[in-house]
Structure formats: C-alpha cells, structure tokens
Image (cartoon, rainbow, N blue to C red; front, top):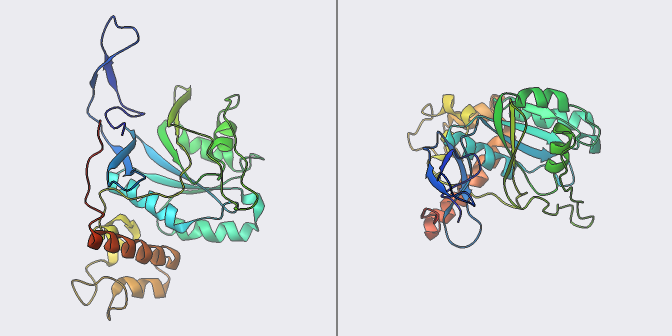
Amino acid sequence: LGNAVVVGDRVRLEPGTEPPVIAEVAPRRNAFARRAAGEQVVEQVVAANLDQVVLVSALDRPAFSPGLADRVLAQAEHAGIPARLVLNKTDLGAPERAAGLLAEYERAGVPCHAVCAVSGDGVEPLRHALLGRRSLLVGHSGVGKSTLLNRLVPGLEHLVGDVNEKTGKGRHTTTAAVLVRPAPDLELIDTPGVRSFGLWGVGALELEQAYVEFRRFLGECRFTDCRHGAEPGCALRAAVERGDVSRLRYESFLRLRAELVDEERSGAARPRRGRP
C-alpha cells in the first residue's frame, strides 16, 4: 500500500534528478486513514496535512447512509481533523426531508451544507467554507463529488459517472486521490468513491469518544462500565430520550460498535501498518 508518500505530504526532492526523486518526506501534522479494503487488516493513509474533511453525501440516488457518514466523521475526530457534511442532490426530495436530516448532524456540532451541484444551489456558502483550507472530499460512489468539484472549480474537466439505474449505486469515476489548487487560498483533494469505510485505530471501547456530542454524558451513567445499550441508569440513552442527542446518531453508534466488537472477538481487528 502506498503509505510512504500520500497526497498532501511535503517532500524534498533530490536535486538534479530526472524524473524527480523524493529524498525526504517531512513529518505530518495529521493524516486521514482508513482500514484498507480486503481481508488483510492494514492501514491505508488517504491524505496528510489537512485542514478539514468534507463528507459529501446525497439525499437520494444513492440514499443517505448514516453508517458511512458516522464512520468518516468518527475517523476525522480520531485524527483530530475538523469535518463538515455536505448533502448533495437536494433537488431529489422534499426540502423538509433534507433539513431534518441535516438538523440531526448540526445538533451533533457538525457544520452542514445542503447543495445541488447540478443547479449550483448552496454551492457558494460551501465555497466560502473551503477558502483558506486544504479540504479532503470523501463520499460514496455516485453522490456527485466530481460534479460538485466541477461546480466549485469552473473549467476543471472531471469525469462524472452516471448512477446505475437498477441499483442506485454509483460507478467509480475518480481512480486516485488528486489535489487541485485552483487559487492560492483553495486546495481540494478529491478521492475515489467508496462502497464501504473501515475505521482505523478506533476500537469498540474508544468509539464513544469519537462521537463528540456524547462526551458530556459519558461518566454520568449509573454503572462505570455502561455500554449505553439496555443498562439501567444510562445517561446517554436518557439524553437521547430527552432529545439532547440525535437518535439517528445514537442508533448508528450502537450498530457500529457491535460490528467492532464482533471484529475484535474474531481477531480481525488486529492492526498492521501498511507497507510503504
């Protein structure tokens, strides 16, 4: 796996070589990683030295996936990188549906944007949020990342894939992470669309800390080893019932933690670094 040098790395080139040869990679201030696809449990570093992660999702075709959204947001939080959520294709559903969905994440402290990349609706406020930052764009195949990038960077020729009419899933159009710098104060890193996203470095016990809005309720449960499921006196579950924590996020957390528990029991989650 290509983890020795990734998009966003600062490097020193060996002088007088053609083609250029990398002599040194500077230390990274941060890195966004995931579990690499396949049976081997290895790290895949996606990009480095980021200012924010931009999760691009769709209201429909493909339908919004809380599972993927919360994985990406949890990974960004684990890496200490700010993240925001972009909900594209808002023209495919009722405005109140998009507003209700984004309200769930805004309550969790995630900055959100409702956009339609095809018409341009909502793109200017997003562009303003990207200025002065190096942003990594991540999302499911078919959510319109390439169309959005073309809208953000007029004149940039980027392949746009059609959504499969039968499955509603997208076809891959970006084959490798690529950084574009259309202006001195704007850096965008596009990535291939993903079918799934495996967490890296976040175990079942650490997962609750990756949900920022949970933190003020952690430690308030009746039992110190509360897993926030059916245990009596759970402060987090009480917060969900009061409406202080999104039920959508809470239920997504329970599903993801159960998956991590199963992986750890089977020994599948033993991490290994990716090969340079």
